[in-house]
Length: 465
Image (cartoon, rainbow, N blue to C red; front, side, top):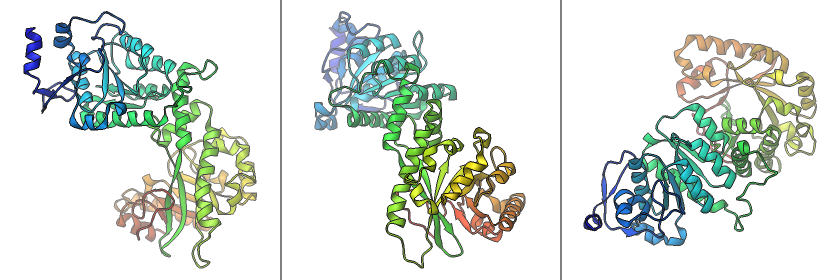
């Protein structure tokens, strides 16, 4: 009873704690949980511990704290969260903090205990430490993915590592977060995860369990992440300007992902490559790049005196093998005379046979070809000679601080002179300062692209001259 009395007497002083477990902002008011939760170290089906022990050692498992904002939301809008951490202080601190945000929180002290919970309960979010004895966070993530392909799993680590991050990606983690990011960042990630779960959960639950004929467990999470990514994939457009005419020369279409597990194009490409779905990714990207451009500049073209902009579309070299790229009925093929296909130098052209003949076939359809990232990557001038491009794009590593480097200036001037002699247009990308712009103009580059003029955005960003 003394323990219970102490808790009651302290009811006006429940602490808001960061990851470290130190007290900070006091909170007024508390209430008991909405349902009994298992104490750390026991399974959900075990006999509940004595009330005194539960209150003294596992307050986070039997107390649900409500703020006035939580009450305003209403219980029907509160998400259920499973928190997994073997450190009792961290577990207690995180549980209290997340309950302050209005979540129902179940806690587990080990990966195996978390599995028992997942077997019996459907969660909106799972938050787990990565490094735990017996079953770590990655192993738990794999097990969770065998139960539910869509539940967002947030992994926390005190020692971020690239190999662990890649494993998290492989199995479809929603977010991989360093513990030193702090409580506000964790709250933001969990809130996003819960919102994402609510917006995509099927009403009948039919999509929550993986099919026995579907992907292997090792790729199930990654497959689900890529599926979600491709569903909501959108294109940003980055203007390329003709600086002396002060006109927009073209727009580069850039892939953008809203999938938290695959937030960057590099990760999307990596996932598609691992799963053998590069062709699918390329087709979706090209189709979505063509639609807004066609509506804006082909079906409703600008005034005759205006410069007709071109559409620059990035290709992975393996796209050259895709027959859909050469299909005259494909959306991009229908506007081929307005399209420049950018082939990045970061991918080896050795991956594709008969490169020269494939590029020639695309030119016959009306496409033009650009060599991207010239100045970094694989074959350099060898790729340049093989592609015989209509345009080259100088890599931003050559552009950055060019006004401070006489060597960079000489390299750019030499490349520009060579391209001019061959009738090849030069685009300098990554221009961010007036000083860089002025040196590039002096070096003969008039087609510029970079944040100095506009940032990539939905169709179509305004240019600042």
